[in-house]
Amino acid sequence: MYTQQNRRSFIGATGIALACSFAMIGAAMGADKAKIKIALVDAGGKCVKESLTGKLELDRKYVKGDRIVVTGGKDLAVKVDEHYAETLLFAPKEKVDFPIPLWPVGKYAKKYPHPPKAFQGEKHVITARAATAKEIEAYRNMAVNPMDSRGKSPAYPHASSNSEWGEAAVFSAKTAIDGFVEATGDHHSWPRQSWGPYLPGGKHPEPELTIDFGRPVEIDKLVIVGRYNVRQGGYWKEATVEFSDGSKVTIKPEYNGKRQEFPIAKRMVTCMKMTKLVINKAKKYAAFVEVEAWGKPAAKPAKLSKK
Image 1 (cartoon, rainbow, N blue to C red):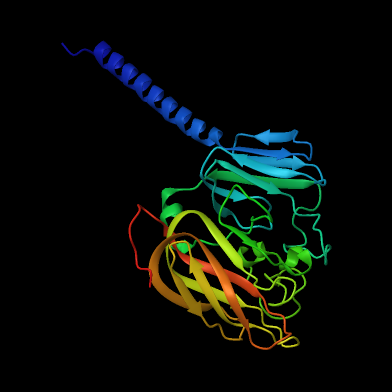
Image 2 (cartoon, rainbow, N blue to C red; image 1 turned 180 degrees about the vertical axis):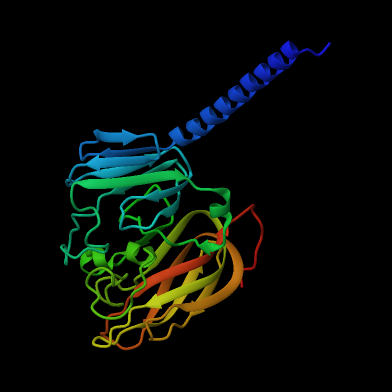
């Protein structure tokens, strides 16, 4: 017979079961959240402070050699400073290593390719989380990464070049994928930083810009923003884009400082290279403010067009 006592027992047992279920879900969610670790590491490799909550708050000025290290996931959404946008990164070894970029070297060493207030002061907040499937699979610019660093990087996308004028940070390869697309006016510092190589035939006869995606991606559109400096008047009027699948396309940007779209046949690639650059006039300097590659991560290997 179903009695009042049975009813109380049933409700009690159900409540306990539900409570346990919610506790297990909460623990699982907590475990997922705790999996992502954010740490500030000094020049000697010592951990200054770390967090497993998805947010690291610092009450300390950055000093030379400091690095922000994020571990615990391959597809991460990271925000290293309030003046930076949250960035989707692919870290195949589940590690992002971001050196604080306050001590550039080379010519124009005091000209920063990032917002001047970034990384300044004694208060800093860094966040990191696992990217959602919707974010990862979305059609987007697969080349953008304002957190990219010069030299080797464990996170992607990553830009590199055999030619960076004056070895200056404001003309480094990474500026071509940082998401800032202001093309007109003085180009020696943020927000008009650009990949500016030496003149072809000079110190580096054949300047090239390589963008590595870190994994297979399917892309079907390129977007180029060329530097527009009326005083200098130089621009790349032609470039060949070589892809890791062996295919090539030739693009002919115009001199206007605007975003110029170049649709291409869809192809699966892991990297692309801007090469065979043709300048409009000898002894003029030219630069790419931004290079975008639109598409999404490849779902599975497939043979796509090489045209």
